[in-house]
Length: 229
Image (cartoon, rainbow, N blue to C red; front, top):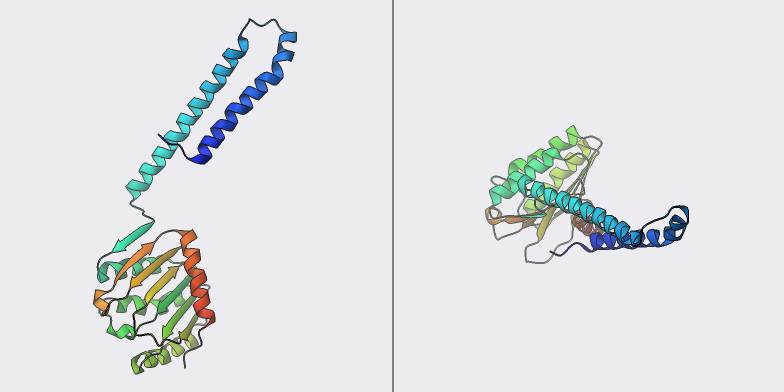
């Protein structure tokens, strides 16, 4: 069994510290009391036994934690094969969000073209009302008349809710984009855009460290976008 590097270093340090302590005190102990020959070996053995027992406890705790994670069903990365499952979990994450939603919708179809995803888009404004101290940012593209009309609708939402902001990025490429939703700067949903909304699949990333990378990328796009008009 291969132990983690930190655990090996901690055990090694404990053994060395014990041996050093025994060597340091041996001269003084022998002057204070008469100790039998080879008493150091017994002390070293007891110290090593204590460390091994401690190590066994740590391993047991680690095994219990791994079992708990497996039983809870939490995964660092989850894959969605269907459009319905993706937007169902995204909607649930949105309802549980407390601080921020950073969203993109860079594609030629407005939310009105989404059959099941429409409920998710409609719930954004409700979230703004429920969480007035929270923040919603949305980046869209204005590559056709339908998206430009939606951009006008977002301007109205911005007037109703000070905590909602939207910007439009310049997009001239013909290939689809990977859209994202970053929830509370901790969870990332990636929509793998297909040739139609109903064929869109997705990925969920439950890792705050990875989410920080996507947030930095999002901020970069945001800084290079402008308000819809």
